[in-house]
Image (cartoon, rainbow, N blue to C red; front, side):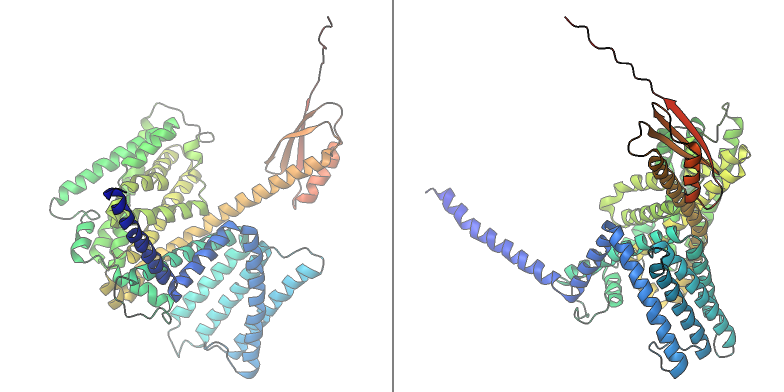
Length: 553
């Protein structure tokens, strides 16, 4: 055996020992109570996203059970004065709230067991909307009755929010349920990652928290304090977000030049209906910088920087719309607003656009703080698309299409608000926000962030209405397709080739040989699927088959 073989045999035990040590260390880090809660949160969030059918069933059962428990608890308090939760409320109002909860439970029970059909998540959310609305009214009344004892504004605000949420849940239950479930699963994943990351970092960093007794809030706050970047690093990163001395004028001038060029590129791309050129405009556009700067200023309590960033975004948006309007007015092209894909894709935003912007804002903030992934900021710019909606606004205003201009404006506002909120959350978790400011001036910071949260709530209303309309359209189209296939039957020589819905008319195209079934029977079957009167346009494409056998010999 050579000396080289001896050395290899000596090294192998040491390598195995190091691997065993690392495995034991990782096991110890992930076996704490905090890490186990993090793993549970990640598993729960993943299960919600991967098992939608099971999730909807579970959520439905949980909501119904909570209805019953909440109603019984309120009635017990109304009769005996004993509270399960330490929240003061008038006993008559508690009785009203309890009756509303039990009434909601009874309605759901009738739906399930009286032959009206199974309880679906949409029905549960709609009933929940009525209940939340009633609770909001109760909260407003309670605030008015106790206005002499305490400040009524917080309760009035909470009650008003509950009323709005209840109306939304009743009007657009499907889109609201989907949005809440996706958001909840995402938050569960993020919280789980933070808890596990804290457990890993705790192994090499002293902390005063006991993992066996620490709450999730305490762990998150300890994570924020431990992630503090420090004054020097924070100042270095802030220099890329704010246009300040030295060379303030040069920085602003460069920003404006890039904005004007990106708007020009985006406008010409919209006029030419070119997706590739629109992507180029997204890469050039500099609007993301002041928006991220606004988020950083909000969570750090930098009032002057927040105002300057807001004004820069506002001025940039106004100039972008004006420039796009002027280019469209002088461009020697005719625009088809009904077929231009760049316009069509940006005039009907929905909740998916809000979720995209939230993810893009979080990615942009993380790329700002972590220089190792700074190259990903280009992908963020493509994902969120800030300048193209402004170009569509200008082009639509020039063409007198005010509805399209409003839809594109809503898309830009959606992207703006979502980026601000998502980036603010990431800045807090990654240490860009000063822990001192968060600890000493939480009320001030919350007051500066609250208007953007309220604006996000306002923006969500039309987004959910659009999403609900899309969901209903998809459901109607799917029902119409199934009805048409059933109408033909299994032994028919015809096949359904196309089904469309245009207003109150269903357009069905079939192809095959022979005589199709009666069109009136199809219309009657379709009418059973629709609440409002429906018409039918049936197109039959005949198929003639000619067979010529091959010659013999």
